[in-house]
Image (cartoon, rainbow, N blue to C red; front, side):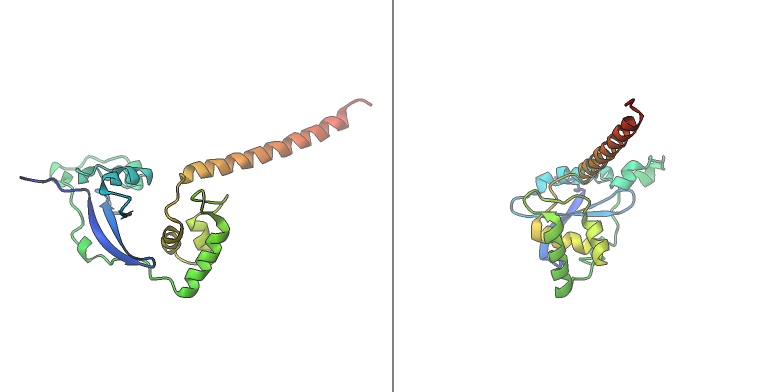
Length: 194
């Protein structure tokens, strides 16, 4: 019986949070990878759903249809039929288990202290204006390191970052509209007959 190749491999990785099992997806066009942590409560059956939530196109049985957000946004160029066969990078087994150096105890403490102030554990999301990237910039540390420690301490972010950005933009627009309404009221007062 012939089995179809999956669009991901299950691998063990070791990082700042210790060893973990991940489903590693490869973009069929550029080779970009996405690691999705597998736990007892997260089975391999929901890999496609979780990859789509992160902006990827994914079909677990067709590696050629797995595309990262960047490649998904780019228009596809016609290519020769022979080149259309999806191939995973041949060096993937030799890739380092982690691309980020482990955080020192002092860095872990600084990150946890910062996250305690800007991450709402109950809602599973950052407070207004904060993200893994902003915390990384504030602490002058790699974003991936922040993401790994946040996921180990608080779990994955449970809201869509685009929706959070829209909420922030709406709040800024409401504040701006209020300021403009106050200025208009002041101007109207000056020009009312006495």
